[in-house]
Length: 498
Image: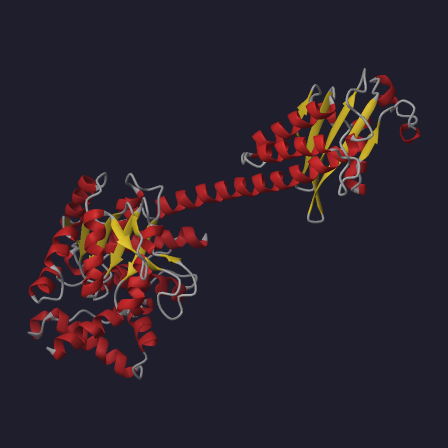
């Protein structure tokens, strides 16, 4: 007894449905668009025992033959050809076509191509998806009708519905792969060693050290004042090392409550605290296989220090409120603008964690100690801005360069970059002169016995007072980041409190 037809596709039998299920399992596991189209074509030809066939997709408002069987892709869509008229009509009407006797079918009466090529049977169905037609598949038999039967149209229509979804998914995957490849190349370019600029002896020592540890998984501690490029150096290590294809995740540890920081680092289980409405992965899990960078590590509370130590020792942790132990493989890098050794002596930081983090220390020098590097950095930032804005590279006058080299740069490289970006905007069509440099002159150490840090604090506090304690406006005028300003204010407050 023959199988009963289904209700959705009236002429489809259970045998047809089984074939469609097998097809769906196969085509939806292929994400490469070219491989998928080849497979779709092969399955369709075999299913209806067609002698020839081709598949077209709509691309850039035109139809393109993507794959073909026993017919050349170049001639399949000949301008005056029978197959072209069939495909164009199907796509325009969005309706499939089937004939089992093309020579006697009145719809194709007068087609010389049909008669010359002795085409007996034809089937053509569109690929529909969410109201759009992606393309069509054309099949025919020239010397025999093969498997072209009344059920063929229903079968191919159902097949085309499945194939359309798979084709769109493959297209999306292809675009994602291309975008991912582009973004990775941009990230690797942006955070390569070319972004670490400097010919000074201190920077050459940094480059030498980084090159020695780049291929290792060694825990690395970056020390130095704010704005010296600690995170930039860490990114350069990651994107030039063996973990470059995996994530680089950053967590800022300053000014965060213990509970918030713990949840961010390790994640939490649903219901573990008020507001935990679902399970959440921590950033350590997100970074698995890659690098985890802890910025301002000295500010981590003692309870979290203990959990972090276990991650470094065993590669294990638990989410907040969870009993399940999870494993993670990450390279841990950290940064601080304080002396972590001094924090250990004061009892603010665990000694065992300090030694785990401080397997190797990279100390980034402040800009005022990098003799001769300012012109190189200025040129680097000018070139970077020119490439970003597609505008001619600005010129800095000798007078302006002397001012830049004479300034003490409390915000270091970050402050210099901000000053150059601001000067480019103010300069308009012209070169950068002293008039575009909104910075304070360097203090004269010969007429003052105060330290550089004291001058820095005086300058910041005076600017803050002039701006009515508005930190955002103060940071903008000083050419430093708001985060740097918060760091300094917090640091000075701790010193005053002591």
